[in-house]
Amino acid sequence: MAHPRRFRFGVQLHTATDGADLAARARRAEELGYSTAFFPDHFGDQLAPLPALMAIADATAQLRIGTLVLDNDYRHPVVLAKELATLDVLSGGRLELGLGAGWMRSDYEQSGIPMDRPKVRVDRFEEGIRVLKNAFADGPRDFAGEHYTVTGYDGQPKPVQKPWPPFLIGGGMQRVLSIAGREADIVGINPSIPSGQVDAEAARSGAADRTDQKVAWVREAAGDRFDDLELNLLVFACVVTDDRAGTIDAMAPLFGLDPADVQDHPHTMVGTVEQMCEDLQRRRERWGTSYITIQGDAMETAAPVVAALAGT
Image (cartoon, rainbow, N blue to C red):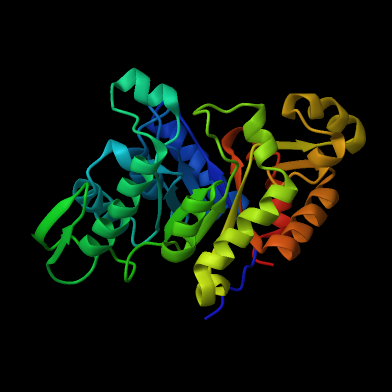
């Protein structure tokens, strides 16, 4: 069945002062109409994603929880499958499973985890997806790959969501987006970050014309299942202002872009609430992107847009 691609919104959190603070933020996100609370997976100043998501699920009634995204290199997929299935069971089936091949160079350098060349990381990530899906499926399964060998493993517990929690795979390069087209339920159309750190080139790589190409890669790889996919955009800048032109002129040098490119940039929301809503609707018409993730510090800023568009 084709995905209706009605708007829904996630919020990406990072940290909290204590459990009560995190619970309050989660309940506020649910109250404002956000669909999902996400956590990233880095070794810097953030809470560990899996226990933080369990705390969010405990504090809320319907807010979904998601990883945006787990680095496949940090955990063996059999161990991760048990952790994620447990989260899905204990949250009552609210997990969205975001997984990636890893990109942040400082995480690897500081931790001592080897940062293999991109092909190796992506090969291992693709195998990890298969190990996870085998663990979630009924009955024991074998897997024999270059990076993982799993023999007669019947993952327990099984997730509540069948056949597994929705897989969210995002990327900015052709190979990962092609894997997403074949394997994911939710596809993140992201900037590419080949340098291993967020920089001006990453901002340029998220521009509208490059997004056209990225969606085309997903469509080509997905084939007949493209219409079933939900497409996600991360918003890195959300500014409510009556002076849209002036604000964009000031922001453009930070992105290394012309002002016109900032206005059309799919990872920004700038202007009045009405202008933001119109922009998101145009982007949905152009790319099919209906799942919008806001950074945690902009949760309140974007709330009127959420109120206007969620579910439409």
